[in-house]
Amino acid sequence: MKYGLVLPNWEAGADVQRLVEAGVLAEESGWDGVFLADHLIFPPPREIGAPHDGRSQDMPDPWIALSAMAVLTRTIRLGTWITPVARRQPWQMARDIATLDRLSGGRVVLGIGLGRRPDYELFGYPWSFKWVAQRTDEALDIIQQLWTGEPVTAHGEHFDMDDVVMLPTPIQKPRVPILVGGLWPRKPAVRRGARWDGIMTHFPGDGVLPADGTPPEQHARDMVGFYRELAGDKGDVFLPMTPKEISDDWLPTCEGVGATWLYAGAMRGTWQLDEELIAAGPQAQLDWRP
View 1 (cartoon, one colour):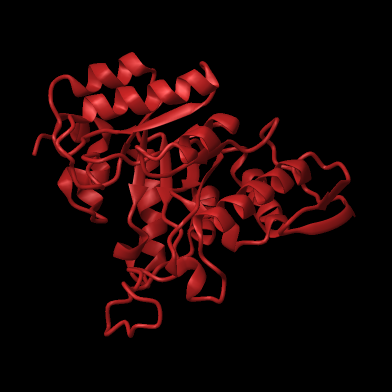
View 2 (view 1 turned 120 degrees about the vertical axis):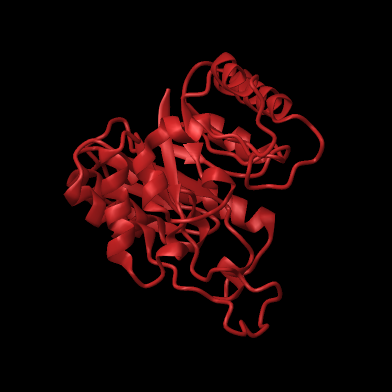
């Protein structure tokens, strides 16, 4: 089992150096992975076009911050939670991530998802689940082809390219792992994760989403069971270290369903960039009870 830490970029504010230092501290403190959120505006406005009224916070770019961490660390995995692929150009993503994989010595994890409506409409993109999902799938196919270093031709609904070779390629083979985020019990994200390299999906009561009365153990069994039906034993499965309604059955459930990562997002129940909690390491979070 590996232990991941989802750092709240927005808590660092404009002090990007502090965010980078938190990633370095995580490696020193025994964490196996650091993941950063990827939003353009945080928190997103409730209505498109509505004024922020001072609510918008600094939101450092995750890939630039991860690049700095890559230079200052040696072993910890570095990734996003999650990047809305459909609002980026796939060829730019392919080159950026391949470069970071080279810089880090092959430690990058690409966490992807559909994102939120403001990530698109605030910047002139249309928003519908169908449009975003189709654009995401088309972009991912182009990205993985570009990572081979072979000529790529693609004439799709959203992207068009002829005989393009893009270098460098990532160190990791056959590709940088692509993990898919989403909201269970919606199934499309889990299906997409089974086609790629795993899932980092939220579910009710996981410490991020409000509980719905179903024990988190049941959500985990249903979600991972559905994933394993599609993917078999391949791929990574992320589950939270401490869901909101944690019990003594939680960790045995995670092991029983074959989780490969446990992640800490809302550490001790709150989102905060707290160096003392990071330095306490994964075991302190596992031992915590609300």
